[in-house]
Every structure is written in structure tokens, then in C-alpha cells.
Length: 114
Image 1 (cartoon, rainbow, N blue to C red):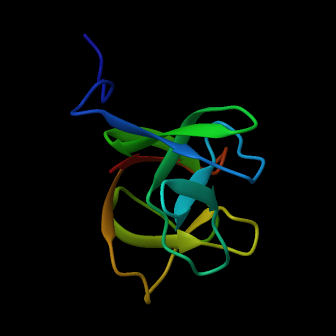
Image 2: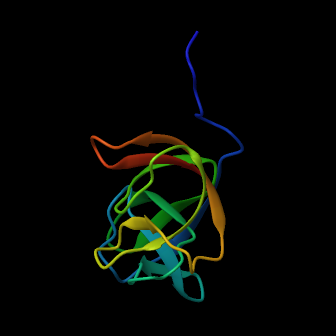
Image 3: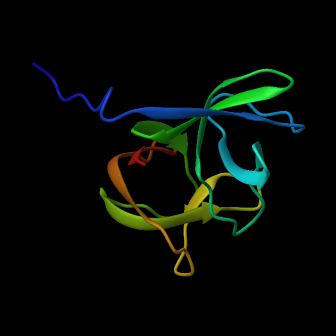
């Protein structure tokens, strides 16, 4: 047996977009029924799991592996916002604590529970 976080209460929503969004990118609500990439210090709502030119399916609840910057030394609760490159980073000014389940500091990836 091995540790697995896959499938835990996964919930998805599909939105329109006018931004080029890539799978694995963190996103924020930009307008009614629409998402975009996140700006610096902006809170994000989920992670793109499918995307084309017009639509993005976003993981709103569940576990996702995302890229991070800054210092996350161990699993635990962190308030995460976007850095200047749209990558998750811990912030003292963040409002939503998220549970980081695993930290891969070699590849700058974290598994986060939404």
C-alpha cells in the first residue's frame, strides 16, 4: 500500500476565459463565469485541470500539485497568493489558509488541499 491523496472530494467547475491558461496553472475569478491567470499578491481559487482557447475546467476542491516559490519548508497550513510570475507563494497577508500535504523542494512543487 502507498500514500494517495487522489480523488478526495474532488469538485470541478468549467469557466470561460480570454487568457491563455495552461493545465496546472492557478487561476482567479475575473468576471461572471470567467477566470484568468492570477496577478501578483492575488488570492487564487483553484487549479486548471483542462483548458482550451475558450474554456477552463478548474479543480475547486480536492488535492492538486502546483508549483511554488518562496519558503515552504514542511507540510502544514499556509496562506498562499500568487507571486509576480503567477506561481503560488506563502504570504502573511493571505486570507485563505490552505493545507500543504507534501513539499518537493527539489522541483518546487507542493500538493495542496483545496
